[in-house]
Length: 356
Image 1 (cartoon, rainbow, N blue to C red):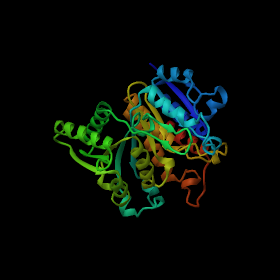
Image 2 (cartoon, helix red, strand yellow; image 1 turned 90 degrees about the vertical axis):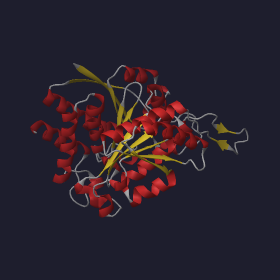
Image 3 (cartoon, one colour; image 1 turned 45 degrees about the horizontal axis):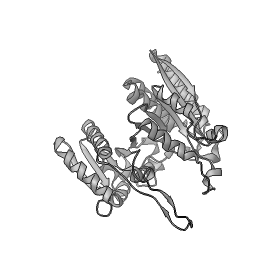
Image 4 (spheres, rainbow, N blue to C red; image 1 turned 30 degrees about the vertical axis):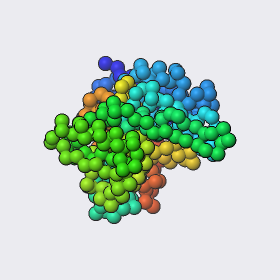
């Protein structure tokens, strides 16, 4: 069987890191006897420049016809520094999530023994931290209407909208993942202030009796932000709404010591998307210095979540762990030691897989 992968490299360092993930996938495919067909498409700022649309119809059709999407990053300073721009790269990401029905973003947060010292948090706080953040991805304030500005331009407004059905499907996913892990679920909201959060809590409380073996706690988002930093090992699975999840997962990235090490999977109704959590890092674009490991680990999640190939995913994780132990790392985590290029790290991972 041939598996079809849509490759959306995007902007900034996207093409460089995706290239390394792709050669790792090809090495795994050769070792295990799989066939993969890669097709590239435009997304983000580069798509705006080429066709005027950050998520062209052709790109969407390719994603719909593929078995998985390997995604790099989007964003460009030209748009970041122009608040009046009517078309923005990030609109392509939101459109992709909405049109593919990617309602759940899975972000594992864990530590790497050789990188614990890189975390700004004390070693005793982060050593052994291991939890899953599940972020609702297609509702909330990022998609709510009405949205805009008044005619005089002096007032702007966004609307946070959630339906009970949207909440139920993501909360159920949280319960299911907690059941596969340490059976503890933290539901994060702001129910003391927001009507949408009170609906979240109401729906979750109705579902809770169906999962009597899961320990459930409800936590306000401001408290969750503090607890992630002061006691990260207390969490197992965390589920929350779109904007809260966006903020909390970036905060949680400091636990590992580098955003360049954290992967993610966006799953839902149609084709799933696998991408690193970091941005396009335009300052490093074309310099061959970006850390490819988050994208490579996203490929590991692709093997596991999209194809059910657990051994293949485990081999990729082992390769990344071994590269860290051997010091084959890029400048962001080199710690004054020799820094390897993006492509050198990719080649080392590929060689390890081939010889494993």
